[in-house]
Each structure stands twice: as C-alpha cells, then as structure tokens.
Length: 115
Image (cartoon, rainbow, N blue to C red; front, side, top):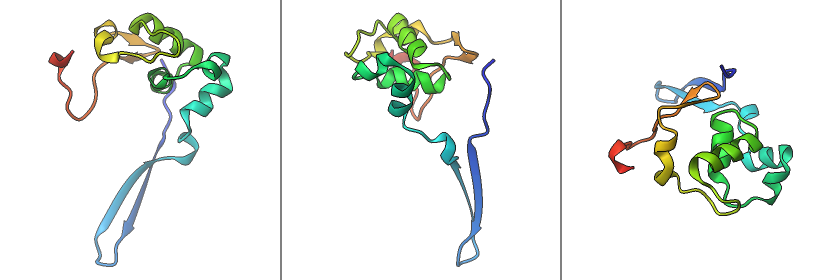
C-alpha cells in the first residue's frame, strides 16, 4: 500500500468581529510544480508536451513519471506528445486498483452515464 502523508495544514484565527475561521491548505513542502518534478526524474518528460494527464496520475498515484507515462499509454491509448482522451477510455480503469489506490470518478458533478 502506498505511504500516506499528512499534507493538510489547518489554521484557526479569530476575526475582528469575534468569528472563528478555520482554514485548510496544502503544506508548502508538498505543493510543487508537477512539470518540474517530472522533468527532474525523467528524460521522457523533457521531450513531452500535452502530458497533463500523465502528470496527474503521477501525483495522484504516487508513481514515477515513466511508470505513469506507460500506464496512461496502455490504458488510455495515449500517443507521445498528443495528449489524452480521458473520457473515451475511462472504463479501462474505473473500479481497478493501481499502486494501492482504487480508481473512481471524483469531482463536483460526477455522473457515470457521461462516459
């Protein structure tokens, strides 16, 4: 199972009017630019364009860029430097596990019938 990190920082403050406000944010040491991370660990990443889905899976599944690149190429039929059609191939991963994480739809307005 993948190692879990405590990445959320919670702060509480009192306003001038006496209200208590609680804020949550990602700790600064975990907030990094995914393109900088990917280019620092992979030669493939330095030559890639339109790789936002590859980088998203790299971060979400805690994979190396090269493993994420291969995963997206296999499951989403991604062609190098051409982007990814996630909606068309989502059924290839939904309900399956990768690196200890179960794949499912997330977001504000998630509907299974859109795929």
